[in-house]
Length: 284
Image 1 (tube, rainbow, N blue to C red):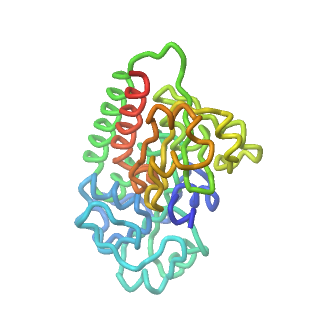
Image 2 (cartoon, helix red, strand yellow):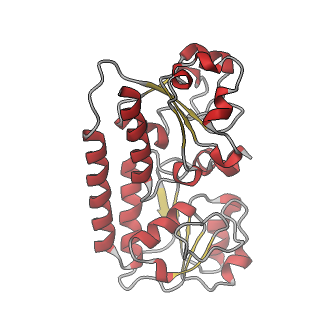
């Protein structure tokens, strides 16, 4: 269930972070029938004006509202089900079940954009989608707008005497994301220090931390990416021993939109806004 919640973490364990590859060359006019098997790619496509070319999107592509969500799966893809939409481009975030090769045998072009490791990977994927869909100028404008918005949000933060620490919760079992991950890089931009970095002995970027270790680390802010699973600041406060944690004692436990927190597309600006708002509150 943790993997269903945290799409970014799941994809990271399946594919090389921040890389892209394709069996389709950029098309000047752009494909007419795109199938997106990545919620992030779906958001990117609509944000650059290619939404009208998307004929089908995967089961988790719930944004924007007009996205043509179907029962197609990016985790357990079915080549025949995809081919039924007669696509001239399929966009994926992971090559699950060797789907790229399967679609290649059907002469269906693909573009594989794995989960981003840094914000620069996001910009690169938006640029590439722009080239491949005939929306290069719109993609460039989106990147510039995102860069400007993110810079303003970070620049607007007051300079703390001492960097604030944080804990990012993926699920109630206390799996978390370190500063090595895409989500962690955003917190680093906001000047925050991740208390879970030391717990990542395997280097996966997604360790499990114990309650005792978390309480001892005493983060200044806690971010909940598992609100979709029913976790709330009140539930965190009710956990044994957690009232001693600074974030809990001072009311700095923030419930994030789980979808926005698990994707690396245009709404990363909204995520950064939630982060910087929390930082400003904690510093007040």
